[in-house]
Amino acid sequence: MKRLIKILAPAVLCLIVAIPLVAAQGTPIGEVDTAAGESVYSTTCVACHMQNGAGVPSAFPPLAGHFPDLVAAEGGRDYVINVVLHGLAGPIEVDGTPYNSVMTPQMLDDQQVADVLNYVSVAWENASALPEGFEAFTADEVTPHRDNGLTSQQVHELRQALALE
Image (cartoon, rainbow, N blue to C red; front, side, top):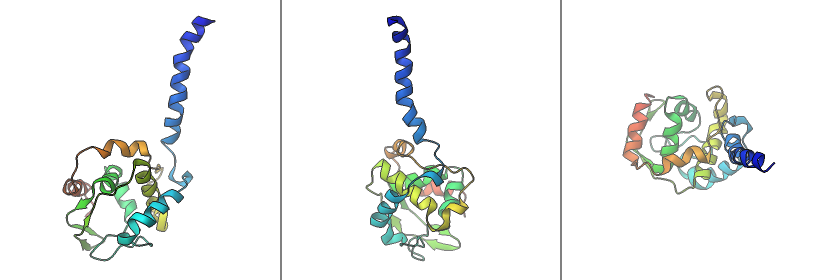
């Protein structure tokens, strides 16, 4: 019996540790409560991107209707995480309108970043334009980006690589 416990204990421990990690990843966006993200958006993002996500023409780009394009592009999920964590500096164009303001890095923890990105993913009818099978952002997905050393200008270069314009 002791031998069986010795053999099974590590496997059971691995399962106990792994189950929450698996449950946190791969969650369809429609199954996520976005209330925490809406709160973060209302206190952190709304001044520039507006309550309706429309932004300010020629100053701050819209998230409504544009965010799904970002995350649908190859590398888009990483890009939007990096924008929130490291900011964005450089000219961009959204639906024919040029923007050249600076977004500063946001002082949010990894869970808050995931929460606000999940909120923006579904707000303002964005959910209907998301790629099929779109999965919610998680804090675990955000963490590796936090200390990647990117500047806001380098994040701009990532955007150019998305080939949106």
